[in-house]
Amino acid sequence: MVTETEIKSVEKPTFKEAFLFWLRLGFISFGGPAGQIAIMHEFLVDKKKWISNSKFLHALNYCMILPGPEAQQLAIYSGWLLHGKKGGLAAGILFVLPSVFILLGLSYLYVTFGKIPWVYSLFYGLKPAVVAIVILALIKIGKKSLNNWFAYLIALLSFVCIFFLKVSFPLIILGGIVIGFLGKTFFPDFFKSKADSINKEDEDGYYINANTIVQGVGFSFPRLIRQLFTGIVLWSIPIILFYYFTSDFTFWSQLSLFFTQAAFVTFGGAYSVLPYVAQVSVEKFSWLTSNQMIDGLALGETTPGPLIMVLAFVGFMGGYNHFAFSISMGAVALLTTVYFTFMPCFLFVFIGAPIIERTQHNLNVKAVLSLVTATVTGVILNLTVFFAKAVVFTDTNDIFHHIDYFCLSWILISFILMYKFKVGMIPWIGVSALAGLAYYIIMKLIIVLP
Image (cartoon, rainbow, N blue to C red; front, side, top):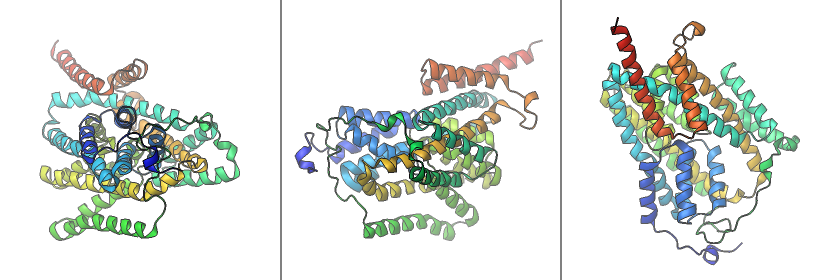
């Protein structure tokens, strides 16, 4: 293997150049993880040639099996490749920072004006569009992860476990990993797919490529101890502050622990963890209702940054409702949620990236971990059913006599236009909001007129 200086034909980007890109990305990263990854690929690989395609995809494959939003962690990973830890910190923080303040403002508007009929009608139109978006995400992830009959079987079992048997999401992911290791060991043919043969590309012309020797790769026990200690200290600081400076430590500790746990089980991104968050925050903690959860997802879809930012809305509503409709406590809860949701992401990448760099050509590891994505597909199917029931059926105890036909029709229309005719998600969200308003006006006229 040659050294970095022998192979690079592109100058190393300055930290300022990379910083400005990460800052711009934070404001334009609409379209969910697929859109965000596409923007990074176009700039980092195609335009600037800072990172080769094989290196980019290698990082992406492993970010998809790490807990947390894969697009943000891919940004952290890419920033780390280019400029070490400071590059990773800049990329990861700037990726989410704009959406934090945008969502805080939208959350304020939601609780202040959301009960006004015409504003409510806008969200009424958004909800079926969001269901269609989740269905599209299910199809996209399924196409990537379900590449043989065994993967389909695992996805089906995952759905059965979480939907019918009420098995917790972390246990399902753990089960997928265990089955992957056992299956790869005793039944390797189960993992064969058409994607097993990959053509090698020309790596020349990229600053970071498959032949680059990245400094500090491999496992280091002292480094691991330092990183874990730093992570524990950073996690403990807000807990200590809440203990000494708040009057309701139980709520803040519950909020902190819950979103820390959520950060550790967000395999496959937001769509995979939302069923878990919705189940606990709605049914157990009563921080918000299922319809408010869908409204939060709609807000999350309209803001840049990772979709997992919808958890910040959940935190806002938790603080807002718990402290007697206090917007200031909602804001503190939102910022707390963001901190505990995204802080572990940096730890995962900084600990895992040096090790991951040593496994770029290990096909066995890739095959086993790909089964996690298949497991996540079944969980996302559960999320689809959860949202569809809440939107289409006004009474889940007697579904056949309480069907919202507007929402059902708009789900079908949204799916056809976005899937078949490739209508953009952001423009269609705006159209859907206006459709909800138009439906409200028409129904008012029908009721008023004799």
